[in-house]
Structures are given as C-alpha cells and as structure tokens.
Image (cartoon, rainbow, N blue to C red; front, side):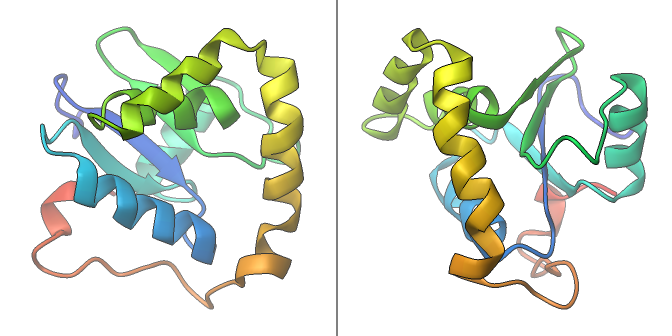
Length: 139
C-alpha cells in the first residue's frame, strides 16, 4: 500500500455498481479538502487491503474506508458515515447516525446493498475516471 499518501483515506467501492459509482462522484464533488482517494474493490490495492484485514468477500458486500494513519478499516454504514463526516456542512450532519449501533444501521445498509443492482443497475466494467479525476484514483 505504498502508493497511498498517509494524509489521504482510501474509499474502496464496487466498480461496476451504478449506485457506488454515483456515490464516488458525489464524494469527489463534495471533498473540498481533498481527503479521499478511490479504488475499486477488485483493484490491486483493494485486494491488498482485503487480504491484510482478512475480509471475506463472499460475506462483505460493502464500501470500505481505509485510514492509513490509523491503519484501520471501516465498512458498511460506518464507512459511509465517516466519509460523510469529512464532507462539510450539511452532509457532515449525517454523522449523527454514528450514535446508532452499527448492527442496526447495517440492517438498512445491507438491504440497500442487496438490492442495488436491481434498483440502480450494473455496468459491464469499472468506471474509467476522466483525466481531470485520474489523480483521485489509485490502482
């Protein structure tokens, strides 16, 4: 994970999911402090992190947030809310939901994740970032 600057956090996402791709573009648009980088779950760095933290990809259908300074990995609703917390007002207000226990938050998260392809569709391949956005992505 040498390619990842220590002052950034890495968002790992399902590269073929339309909802996930829209979410990544939303984060990029609102990431005014340039805190996040992105990579598909099935990228080389995604696989390194999955292996390092022993994530069972059969069990995890989730966005992941890796913080290299803390060497910590967050998943599901916790990852989404920790990302929102860094995006400034009013989006950061969503972080208030972190007070709800993760197992309750993740019931909603898992329901959406389970149905995301049916509701939002799926791409044939990963999103290719535009040249302007290329610096936000890591392989």
